Length: 75
Image (cartoon, rainbow, N blue to C red; front, side, top):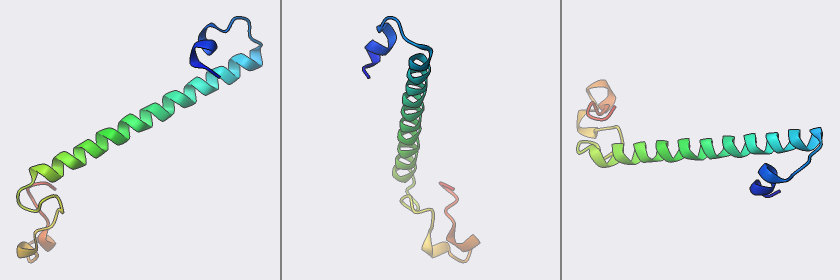
């Protein structure tokens, strides 16, 4: 069903209104998840680009004797 039609479709039964509300809520949930996924991806990409010590791996092999080589710059 078209979004505009949902908003301005005229008379609807209670069942149609409930279905439309559920549809719009699901669309909003999907969009929110997509935005969160994009934000997480962007944060990971920035973390990877910023760290000059481990290049985003979170591990520096030369310092594996110190807390298992954990990169303190980005973790």
